[in-house]
Amino acid sequence: MLRFYSFLGLVVLFLANANTSIAQCAMCRATLETNVSNGSQEQFASTLNFGIMYLFVAPYLLVAIVGYIWYKQSRKANT
Image (cartoon, rainbow, N blue to C red; front, top):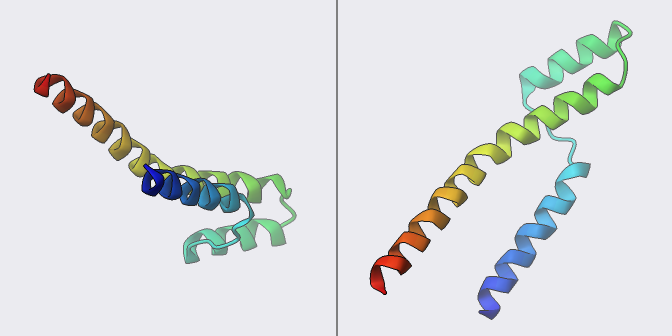
């Protein structure tokens, strides 16, 4: 159980730190630099970063949900 809590703590630490991340793909960075240099607002940058994080988290969340349902079904079948 300690191993699970250690892993969970590590995941929470990474997710809490993800908001300060400034890494972006090359195409997203080029789009952002073009829009900012043309006088667009800074909110575009935060919206773009949110979209990147959403695309990053969605597949992992889907796999976690499927894994949880699978786990519950296997526990139910064993009883």
